[in-house]
Length: 510
Image 1 (cartoon, rainbow, N blue to C red):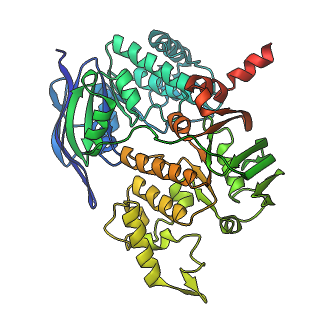
Image 2: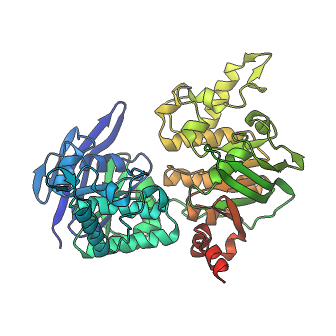
């Protein structure tokens, strides 16, 4: 049995009002791929941030290569050979790949000038050794998300990392990019590196990890050999109960067209065309999913549909009525619900309490208000009912929205929008940052809305979610809808090809 490269013993970390890590133990063997899994808020990222020196533990010890270490800042972790690739990359867009990699660790020529030539040579050698395939001279702003992630990996290898930490590394990757990343993981392992990766995707855990550790409510539930457990067993360890991992639904029975988009175009904040002549329709009793690599216009499309951005061309019809250019309030009054992509920016007022947030956007309507007076008794009773029905974990209706976990903030938005019984529901990233139990709950509610005859438009960066929820899938690439397919007739690799425009390139080359 391989020796442990890392031991974290009885780690405790307390933030105001929250015990993020409660006596957590983690042992990682040298040369293994170790998955760290758990629900949102289970303490995974906190534990890894302690290991990387971003947080100091309140209690507990860390042993690295058998010696007790004090990781009081990231530089100390880097010196020991610990590197971390964060979920949101730490790269400078205008700089080249090699400039980003050496930033802060620039080799010098004659102690004065940066020796960019030797740095480029070393970056290329690292890239070749581990099969990372990065171009040292490309600018970050011109490369794909998958390439940016590989740059982050080269960056920590350049600094001598032996233990590599990845926080949700596949969150924004296509299936092809995920496959490439896992090949890199295997190459790193073959070269003697050790990998810890945080994820909520249990299929990936089964595919790539040797062992896994489960955290729940800030405590370590256990560590097991991945090959000895099923995805269902891991989910039960994470949540503490049986969890339905697949979306259980009957065949859709589509009705009339509720939403019709005809030749819609829009510009981004810089005035550059970002939504380009999009046409699609969503019928009652169906879920239309929009699949695409983030940044291809899906965010701006939803903003136009919900009144948050003006269209430059085209029309939007709701049940046959032209609603192009209406304000967000007017759109809501048409019984159109919206679960926004960014819950904190668009979905909630964080300093408002839950009662205020639960009626946000509907606060001026009966029965919440009458004759310019708020009916607070009804609002409080209504909020308490939704908190119970949607299992929002909170001390009460009076607490500020910012005090809730991300998953519970999402449940507040879901409860508010679903309770208004919309005829059309636009759901953008409905389960982003949400734990596995809440994902099951949200998916079931979306299917129930569909089965009640509602039209549902879902945008998600999670391809598994799009494929399992949707009846039809529209693929967006470079601001245009390149194809609309039945979800039962396409696999994730075909979708991935459409999402990256490779099918278009093949057509153009014929």
